[in-house]
Length: 79
Image (cartoon, rainbow, N blue to C red; front, side, top):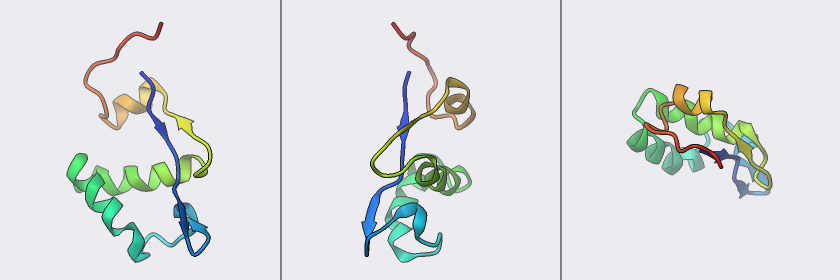
């Protein structure tokens, strides 16, 4: 299984990782991640995605990290 994470771009030419965590533009993404993961893990995972790779690249999470964040309950074997 592959899950790729990365930052997004741009607000006033700044990426998500360049904006302060309390910047209002993060609000909707935070709401989504809280809904998807929960109030404890959601914000942490959202900010992890923005720090993992720049908006024009991708970081593929290891199987261990996918399990740690509980993003999948089953793993499909890679071919």
